[in-house]
Length: 193
Length: 190
Image (cartoon, rainbow over all chains, first blue to last red; front, side, top):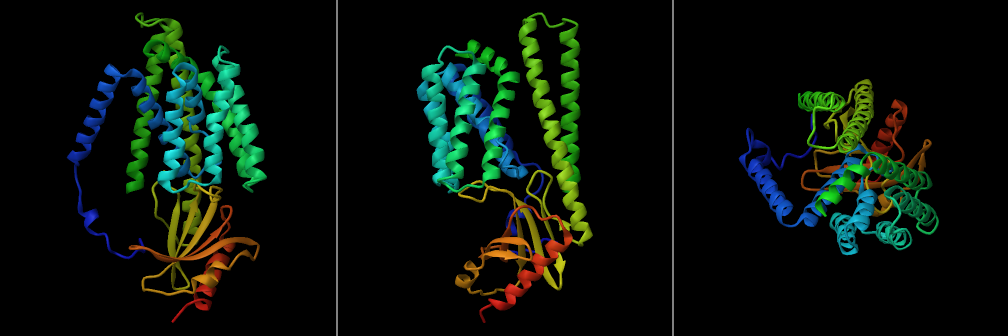
């Protein structure tokens, strides 16, 4: 029933078990193992970047871009609190700026997101460096949503419903991630970093 | 068949996750794991249960949405073209023309809000006055028209109308398709 012009037939002819996929998976596993054994910070960064991309892809695939359930803010908070500021900048550059630029979505809205993702955890870091993860994370989430909603609605003329939904769901999911996954990651950081 | 395969693999993963979580609860409650402290075990288990419930709720709503679109498609004799975890597309024939309805949500400049793309698909090469098409905006029978475009790529050739938000009513979908037929006659270049 697919009504498309038949031009790319050759690609569909491949069937059966693909050995190259297994090779790729084995290579990724080997790289992860080497990273884990030699450079633990790098391993965690790669893990966080992959998980963030999975979250972003899920959001788009499910058609619910106005629900910010991807753990980007949560991971940014964890990295700045338990690792270092340099790793935090690299993480955001790769997951926000470079990802948007690569997808051709580098607009005023995405640039604002990038600035706010950088700014809000930094403010929390300078004022609440020794606070608990819950206080640190919630202040960051409230700051981000509190700044993002008015700026995106007024000067950038974004959709009010979507922007508000993004802001509120961001706070809710950061809270849930901190409550349920925060202690696990704290243990991991204490063990690895 | 592909959908059934996809669904059965999802259910298999869920059964395995359920068994894993149930056995972890059993082991932790009966204090069988002594290498790791009880506190650590508790935190890990809590995190696992959270992810498990989150996945179940997401999947449940996804399946609900997917089956609703399938039913809607059946009611207008359209067929589902995508898998469960992709943005749903239904395709079929209406008034001797091929149409596709795509329920989508994309990131970017402004299109990230939920939208319905109604596409009139052509098998032959067509030419349209793109300048005039780009000027079409406003409302048609209550449906907001965000833009009208003629898309030509290597494997695609269709006239597209973007509306917002999702359209679930049969009559509104037919309105949009009639509107596309009208546009295709009006703005076609010979």
